[in-house]
Length: 329
Image (cartoon, rainbow, N blue to C red; front, side, top):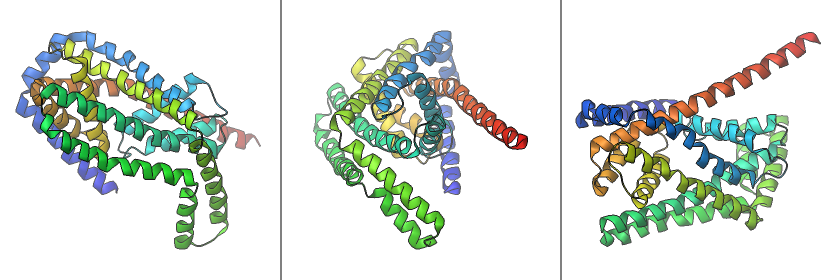
C-alpha cells in the first residue's frame, strides 16, 4: 500500500508540474500577483464551512457538545486527509483518538466518526448531483444528462447498501470474526469481539434515529455549499469572475474527483486536471484554473499546517506528562 501511494504521489506530482509548465509559469504567477494579499482572506473564511460540518458531527454525539474542541479536531482530521498520504483514512482514526482523550467513550467516539463519514458520502452525493445540474444548465450539454444520471444512479445502491449494513449492527462484528479466523481466538481477540459488539450497537443506535441523521446531513450539505464561496471569491479576485452556479459545479465535481482517486496524496494532479477540464467547459482558461488550484492549495497548507503542529504538540505533551507521572511513581 505504501508503495502504491508513493507511485501515485510521483505520478500526481508529475502531472501537476506538467500542467503548470504547459500553461506557463509566468502567466499563472502574474494572475496571483494581480490578486495580491486579498487571497489570504480565504484562510479565515474556511472556518465557516468547517464549523457547519462540525455542527453536523456534534449532532451525532450524545455526551460531548463543545464546538470549539470539535472544531480543533475537525481541523486536524481535514489537514491529515488533505495534506498527508493517509488515503483519507488517517484523519478519521486520529479524530477518534482525540475524542477519547477528551473523555468520550471509545465506542461512541468511533461510532460518531463512522456514521459521520457515511452521512458525508450521502451529502457529497447530493452536492455532486447539484453540481452536475448546474454544469448541464450552464453548458447546454443536456444530451449528456442521461449519462450523468446513469453514473449517479450506479452510486446510489452502494450508499443504500452501506447504510443498511451499518443499520444491521453486524459490520464490525463480522470483521472481527474474519480477523479471528486468520489470527486465532486469543485473549486479544476476545477483547476485540467485545469492542466490536459495542461499536456495532452504537452505530445501530445512531442509524435508527433518522432525525439525528437528517440534522447531520443538513449541516454537512450547508457546509459543502458554503465552501463554494471560496471558488467564487478566488476567481473574482483572480480577475475572471463566474456565477454561483459555475462555482458550485467547479467545487463539487473537483471534490468528487479527489474523493474518487483518493489514493493520490493531496489530490496532486487530480485537482489540477479536474479544474482545467471544468474550466474549459465553463469558459475559464487553463492558466486561471491552475492559479485557482494553487490558491486552494495555499489555503489548505496555511490553514492545515498549524492544526497538525498543534496536534503534535498535544500528543507530545501528553506523552511527556505520562512518562513523568510513571517516573514519579
